[in-house]
Length: 176
Image (tube, rainbow, N blue to C red):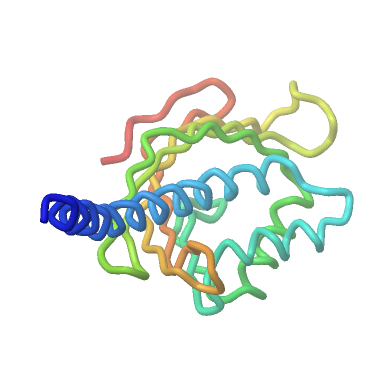
């Protein structure tokens, strides 16, 4: 009887741990998407179309990316093609360096999650000189919605909110 009780308790503990294990796996997979987003922006392959495709596939097929345009207006790109085009358009004249931090992922179901993260960014002209005018530095807060799609955690919505911006060394007021 004692062995049967131990087996039952072990099975009960294991069944309770599986949801936590699945939760931890989802959090890890979604955090990887956050870091991969920065990686693909910072490390374009010589074949930019290939990099753009990999970047776009961090999103679900109907995923939406909302970021600021050059005039600091929100601009939304929906679907793989639009997101890949956004990537290609920006790679033609800028280089990036992102440092991601404060990644927080909150699973909301077996297949969805929400999250926030921050990225310190450094953007400059793609002319080869780090001293070119037009250098931007700042901090972006990302508010994300994730969905498990094709076996991976992907962004279904990603919205970048500018929190701090410095243009050529002049720091503007923080954005609320």
